[in-house]
Length: 497
Image 1: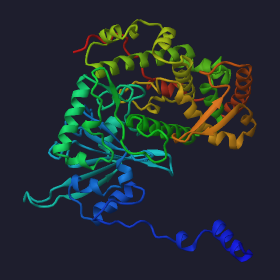
Image 2: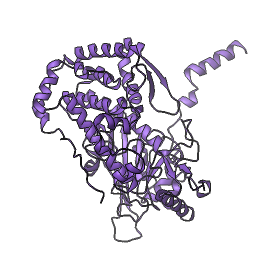
Image 3: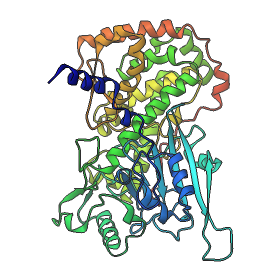
């Protein structure tokens, strides 16, 4: 290759081709699906440009890639309608930064609404959006007008003031197809529902005709004892887990964004720099967690609220025990005691904190103890962190059944911490994983992994940094938070009605 030609291609490599660099943004074509990345602003542009007056007319114009990612609710606690044959559709796209939900059919009471949750990169928060198609004329043939609402107050009733999506944790998602670990077992009521739904879609697609990669009846297993994943039949971009359950993808993406939301809340409260080492200590399972804070803080917290670390941990276990029972009740539609007996699991209401951890979590250190430490961190700074958790049930302090969330949360947190504390790199190895949208953390210090001498060394480093950083803050006024702290949930939930 001649020198002049080499220089030309090098210039293209470093500077970019002018025609590509100046490419215009993707235009809206009302005759086909949008080709670019979908955002709330783009949805609004499509509706206004194409004069959309019905949900059915909008869905086919959403990007095909976006419509590959969806979960289906056959039993929903939303105001939008859902049934086994007409499940509610929740689209979430490749990154869950725009969640869009619609009723299963047009004539549902709220069938003319589209509920959206948008992730704001600017302030790292979830924000509610609502689109409602309203007929302004009495003429039944008239076209409905689109009415958009940003941050509608009606959404706060279910999604809290500190707004976030409602979504259960691994490994049960009651009311969604693929509810048990992402799968459906042949011969169950859910299997009957799903097959009936697919048969209906084949003869009358309706809104579900817009789903890309929906499974078909002829591909489902026929064995009586077989089970199958509720998955997308097409390759999902950016993953190496094509065919894995849709509920997994949604859970993974929501968790990553939710952890970023928590980091931002700490910044908004002005305690990020002071608390970041204590957060890492909680995720690392460091012992004697009270020592991560100035000594008089813990004393004052207990004197004012009656909550020391042991009381906080009991509070977390009771809340999670209640959540496990209620979720199992919804999932199996029978008294949870009967389910646990049939599954050869102990009744969670009869277990001590330690035995509960051992029975219901893969790693005891990885769930309750880390969640307890994070709650203690919040309370010692004078606020309740219940809104950090995504389950619909108020009072739940349940992050995830396995310890994997620790790796995910630590990865998100370390993105910022390692920029200011490069000395901590000696204790953490970060490695991006292809199919995941977070940074996987391989750390000798993560609590659910095998203990090594290095663990205590890291905990000692984090503890010293934490005490020094926390001492720069003024001690919170716990009298202000005392009345707002949730009391322990009831231990006896009664029989299933």
